[in-house]
Length: 239
Image 1 (spheres, one colour):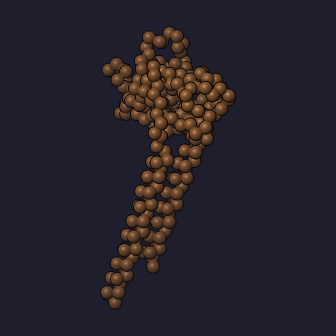
Image 2 (cartoon, helix red, strand yellow):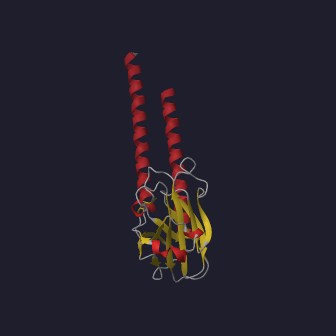
């Protein structure tokens, strides 16, 4: 009887071990699928605050990283101030990078604005999306002077009330061959580097929504598999 009980316990442990192995193998496979799907190999270099997309078809299957020389204005919120009077404060960043190096030592609160000019051939009205990565909170996004969205509130958020930075995709319409993007924000967390340490991504509506839908489907799949694994484990130990 003792050996039969011991054999049953061993069998249960082996079953749990095998199911656990399959579970983690599935998660690993899902991780690689996720990395392959979300990896954007195409990067477009911004040169002195301007990105030239006129040689790229931006109407479909278009998704690029906006890298290198974004304009940056430390201690200035461009959407709230006259751009003509702040040109002397402009520097060119090497995105993605921390903005801390552009501020003087001793400044407790860092805030500023990024600006980018987009040149493209496609002039008919079309929806686009831009993914702002985690790192800056709160912030506001403006396209051609129009407020599109943001994270948190620039005027009321402080260290205690500012939201946690997270990637957000904002959607908007472009109908000209020259457009302007402004991202202005405040770094309320003194223990984190300011600015963006990951690339800002621009794409057409379909491509950006496809990425968002895949992210949601992947999270649901992980939750479902974890629930099945949990139920099987409980069932095995209850028999």
